[in-house]
Length: 332
Ligand SMILES: O=C(O)CCC(=O)C(=O)O
Ligand SMILES: [Fe+2]
Image 1 (cartoon, rainbow, N blue to C red):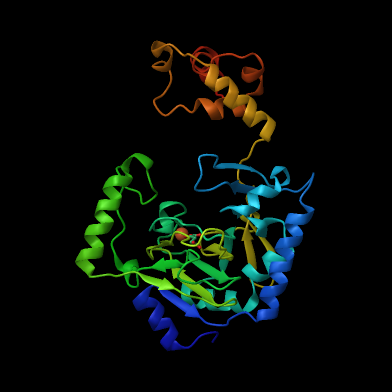
Image 2: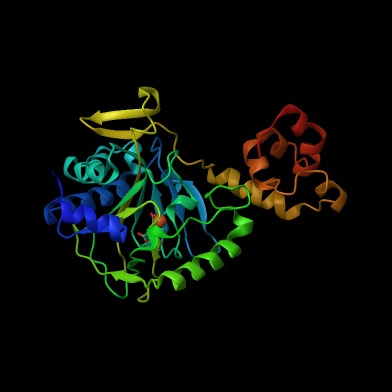
């Protein structure tokens, strides 16, 4: 047993398990040096994608290789290092960690994504199933590894013990994945349920090497950073299970019981193209009738990013889609 029966019961009751000092300080220090090296050597050919300038109007997703040094001076999210980086694979799928997760899930975990956050997420309270529900309900789990101390002021994680027992909110299509336009209702439901169950948030003050494991339905988020410039580096990994991905084609085995989901990196576009699109969009004066000719959720920005010929020809994306793109099955 990687954990004892009391810990299994605690997890079932509380929706989380805190493992203090799970990773040795030396291991954490090595990971931090590795992150520094990743920043220092990012260049042509690097496959990673970063969400940059978070919490500012400049927030955008870009290739890590194109990020200037400045990006590291404020909140960012370095996505899916585990897909191509052995050091991150080895810690996200650490044999000891996987054994614990496997016992809690009753199945073998598969890493589906990783987020390296140097300033925490400062993300409001949410259920991860809003963004990545598993095929079989609750066959998902997350690990959070402190790579730096988490204090009251550097944007610590918070979570609501017992919140995993709240019946998930059903969006208008019957599912539990978030629908942006319906979040106000989902948030109101969440607040009602917190009150009904008498739940209260706990702030996680942590030391490097501490690990928090949370249930698919545990309500959690990142507090705002109160002391400007302070960092709180952590690595989050979300996992589904081999139960839902029994076929060898959908997963990659990097070692005994160490699986990751086979999938591409997040979608990103070259910065020169993004700038070009922004400039063109600012100059656009689409007549209302042409806007009405495309679906209400048509994304003109993405249409231009995906369709280089439309951008090059400086065609109005709405008009182009209505006249040609729709028939040609073009993406947006
Ligand atoms: O570390 C954090 O601030 C929370 C990140 C988070 O909510 C997640 O990755 O699911
Ligand atoms: Fe989350």
